[in-house]
Amino acid sequence: MATIDLSPATQILSAATPFTVLGLHSKDALHIAAAIAAGCGYFITTDDRVLKKAQQIATIKVKVVNPLQFLIEVP
Image (cartoon, rainbow, N blue to C red; front, side, top):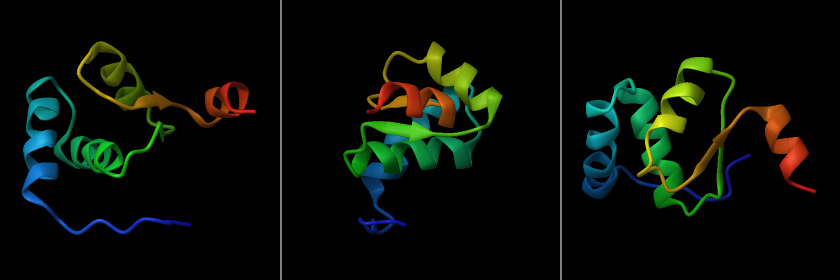
């Protein structure tokens, strides 16, 4: 359940653009940029492609993990 609602904002779109240039699909980049804008510490996904690409992008300011990794890391 979401506890924060974000409206579409230019800064989220701007933040997503470099991620697409680095190889993420536009929807994935938008989701990650929105998570960063919301102040999330983690972005949880089961998409192996997103997990792999996100690990290669040093500018992502959120930790991208799968659900199992999240359960192991967060007490």
